[in-house]
Amino acid sequence: MDEIVALYDESGHQCGSAPRSRVRAENLRHGATGILVRDDAGRVFLHRRTTIKDVFPGLYDFAAGGVLAAGEDPYLGAVRELAEELGITGVELESLGESDYADEHTSYHAFLYAAVWNGPVRLQPEEVDWGGWVTPAELAGRIRAAPEEFVPDTVALWEDRLPGR
Image (cartoon, rainbow, N blue to C red):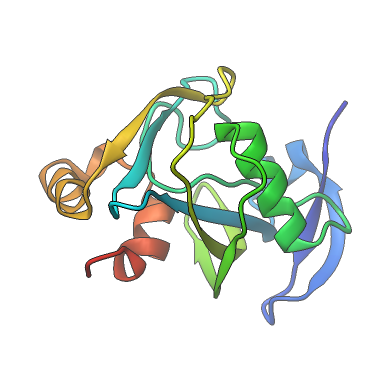
């Protein structure tokens, strides 16, 4: 069954819904979440997306998250995505505001959050191939060395928000 995704207007308000397949095919502006996960040492959780993802397959990402379902509260959507992708539950999310991203592959209004987590991470095999902790300096170095290996939306939305920047 095709997931029904929340559409967002240019003002950042939910304005309708559409099937995920149509959102991707027509690059409709939708709602999405992004969650930066750090540990107490300040390291960031970096992961590689599976090659079957519908957008930016096989690239590295340093934010969990995904599209919002029609009518879904952004905070609750972020909680859901964090549990689904990384198996992280019971953690408080800190809101880091909202932003927008658009390119030829995706267009969305983003709700950004951060979480501190020191427990185990359980990767969802359908979405995540690999994951591990890196320092902000290591992450920045990897992005500088090979920007084409990272999802461009996460880099654009988070580069100035990373710990230690």
